[in-house]
Image (cartoon, rainbow, N blue to C red; front, side):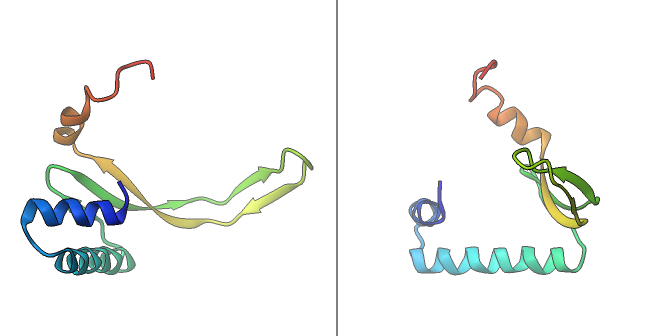
Length: 97
């Protein structure tokens, strides 16, 4: 599902204009961004938690040239799904795929 499809689906479910939904999503993303810039995690009860993690410096090797390069440390956002949500989607994808 892309952004346009999400806006359309939420608009239908909530009976709110697509423009209002678009503004709501933009505000939500902005609030997430502000929280991350302040070093805070974002938790959505029943869905999961978005956490900031530091990836350490590492060495990579280009497989075609065998040239080694250092990748500097960086901050990244990870998502940890809640147990409630895991249970909801557990049987959607058959095991072994």
